[in-house]
Image 1 (cartoon, rainbow, N blue to C red):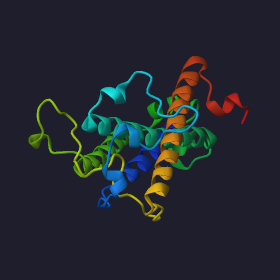
Image 2 (tube, rainbow, N blue to C red):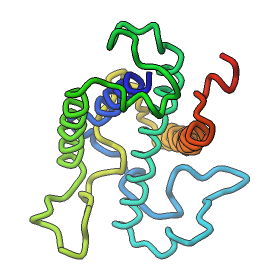
Image 3 (cartoon, rainbow, N blue to C red):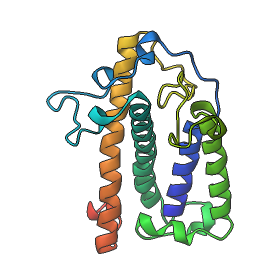
Length: 210
């Protein structure tokens, strides 16, 4: 049930971006240069074949990292949404278990009214995220759209209900790297799921006879 899957994806995504006090950043997180960025692992190292980071100033580099970590988080939820949505289709208590087929078709099967509710919920959560990390457009130059606050570290919206964030800067960088790597893999996986289902009209689990 893709709409169920997407609904759970969006709810989880919105929860990840829910408003919370921004934690004070460590000295390691205040510096933001390509040489210091978490996320580089052997054997690729700092993978930037087109030289985007080399051409970017600090503010632009922060926007790039904000986009990467946010898309990675959404993609991780999307992958779960694909698999869970297809696994429970026909057996969920939602929508009389009528939603079925490949996950990419589930959203269009959700009854009218849910779309507006989901969009409203996401919009409200994203507005709060912007208030935490973004400079008010009225205070930013016209040639610097999406300018992030100087004290804001990309992705650090203060959401840590389980208290998992390490205090040690090295451990924190390691955790950030793990999140980035999982997010990068999830972005590729989600794109592959979308393409595969669009090509043959079969669900992902169906390809594995699950």
